[in-house]
Length: 204
Image (cartoon, rainbow, N blue to C red; front, side, top):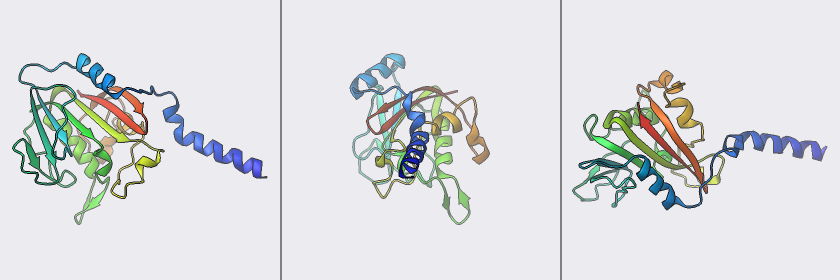
């Protein structure tokens, strides 16, 4: 009886991680970023925006001008204060060549009530699509289910799987449209780095 229960548990666990089994796993994060710079080279005058950047916006694509958005007012000229779970990205339509989010997506609520229902994560993805130029690149690095890194931090409210972006925000299935997602992205690459999923999306 115990053996049967064990195999049932293993079967359930395998189902929960099967989407990661065939995913490419990288060991060298710097080499991955270098690969992205080669694939999507920055032009003169290119702009990048790092979401949830703290005091130091990242620039993995080596863009010419770097901007950031953070929930705190950090007092730095190129970093704008905004709570992106409730407010739009404070930049104009089609103004960015690149947008990045490092360990940020998991902090954006999926659903909030103010007092009516809002799908904050869907709204954020709409904003990312709006602010990117046509063909612009969005790079997200976030803890991926079922690793405990998804849940250990009590401020992680948006667990992501390897299928979140490819099913709900892609240019093929567009399942996010039923919740109000208006754009579409081409899923260019998804890889596993330790407990994190790295996703590269291109605005279509």
